[in-house]
Structure formats: C-alpha cells, structure tokens
Length: 99
Image 1 (spheres, one colour):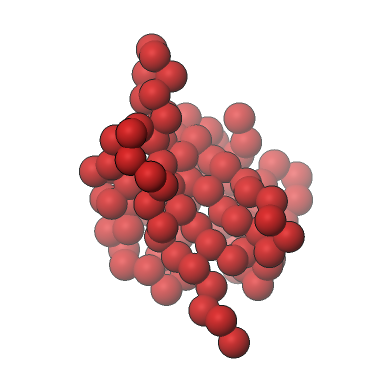
Image 2 (image 1 turned 135 degrees about the vertical axis):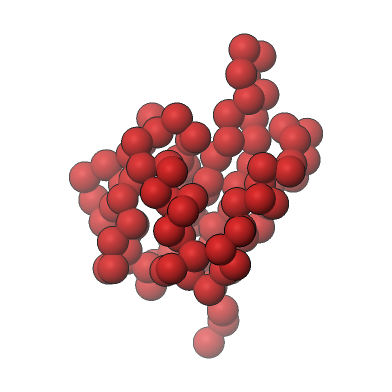
C-alpha cells in the first residue's frame, strides 16, 4: 500500500515526487476483494506507468479533498467514483490536454 502527498510541484508517492507535468491522466475504480470493496485513485505517468492509491492508504483522504486544487476538475470529482461498482469500467477523472 502506497502513501501519497499532494505538493505544489507534483504528487509524492512514498519517497519520490512525480511532477504534475508528467501525469497524463487520473482515474478511479472499485475492486471487489471478497471481504471488502476497495476504491482506487490511479495516476497515469507519461511513460505508461500507473501509480495507484487505495482508500486505506495514508494520504488518500487528502488526495480526495485537495486534488481539484491542482487539476482542472470539479471539487466533487470523487462522487463519480463513489457511484461506480466493481463491475464498472474505471472512471476517467482528468486527462492532460494535448498541446
């Protein structure tokens, strides 16, 4: 389980910072683990790597409450993920605009 901190320069996952300029998409989904349903927020890096943060991880609540201050998304963005079920496709929250 990772931990995340939102910083002005990017998202800090565990011990490294991924600059905002290198994040190309943010999405979320739910996963049925039989004993509980986990909620994930996923950050996609421009190299194709994905960094996932699950709802029990340190910093998850901060990401949910503050992500809209760093990306051009509505403040209630997480409601779309909350409404989905484990059978649904991931919910696209943000995609970096093409230049």
